[in-house]
Length: 441
Image (spheres, rainbow, N blue to C red):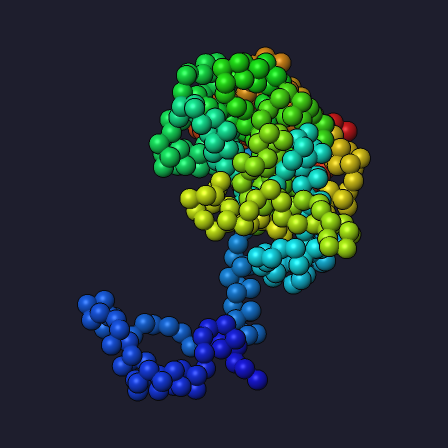
């Protein structure tokens, strides 16, 4: 039986000696002395404990993991509690046929994988209203950055200014600023309702719904941007789109976002599949992979990678982006989650989230809390932002920690939370204790 350590860390002693004999060295020390500069060698041996068996390692790791304090996170920002249906967990997430397979270079040999990704694209197109979507990207912030790059490629004669709504998720703002700095673009961050594009503007990015919960009709904004030759990117939420107007209806040019809340556990922030959808006119500028339907040599239906030559993924100077694959496993989970629930149940889930959010907004207002409103008449979907004094925020934070709940803290005087499908009555009772109000009977 192979010892546990040798199944994970390097070759056996016999294999090491065979390689040393071939290279002409008596020992690893002699080999190391020959190839590692003397000035970086360690004089004393590392204090490494003895190797453990597999069962001992499992017990040790379990003991370390049990030291974690597991809180219920309501921070929003594209990260939500979700329930992974057991059939999806067992047959996809925990199935080696899905989670261990590398995306094949000759993708057409895996028709089942392509069909699952084709379903993902169809789901995204249905919810965003756009005719074409790719087979996923790495995450929402980088998807926004890729959308901005598409806008720049589509408008070769335009300048180098991109507008980002200050109500985009913070990670999106951070990633886009970094990408813009490398590409020599100017980033303008501000209130979308007040933004006036310059002659150098080529793209405007808005969050829909916004990171602090605001929900707006961007039709007029999009018309104003298009009048000045600026393309509009909507970073959006697929669950919200089961209730509210899709970006294509108000003539946005690109829609991107995360599919995490469609059955993919939050983990430590990933991996989660992002989506990317756009108009037909931009189909050859889309980053990543696109699965299309075709026929084989016998005339039978078949799926293949479409619209991009293989040089797209090999020649850097010819590529439309540095994304050459897809976030396959999370994307498949998201598409199967949508199939599992169906359109009616997804809408019912969104209606429940929306109703709970509005109920909590009413109870908080009745209890004297000031809800943040950028504009009068703001609608909302799943997120509330509350303005209060610094002392009150400290008190509420201590209560939240006691209840085992992570809230979002915007500043010393603002906090918020987001509702998701996992919020049940006991969790509502905990929120009521934090904010000191009574739930309706």
